[in-house]
Length: 171
Image (cartoon, rainbow, N blue to C red):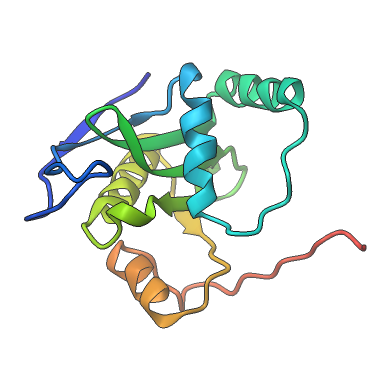
């Protein structure tokens, strides 16, 4: 499943059930973790497109798990998934044929925000990228509020380094 990391809890942090937060354990989301991941994604986009049928979602999850270049990381307190991100490690023919990482879907459960969990998760993702010889890691966000942008800067990302462009299919 890959390396794990334990992080010290934030002082006075409280978990979903109100208990004191234990150490945050960061690891790949296991095959049986799909239901918890989908529940956590409710904290990512309040109004997301509905998922297709269960069989199609399971097929997508199976293909994700089979691809060694797709890494779905979760931050767990006890057995509860409280934060997650996805990183794709993309093979590359420039920069000495070193790959690059792309992080998406960074989310922390609303009851666990502002405790350093997301920052620890992103540091772990970057560490995995560096261990796989990535020459850079990129992250895009649709959030433009200043606190979110400062959060990503504090996690080691430079909002001035590149300009992102997004295209969506015609309606």
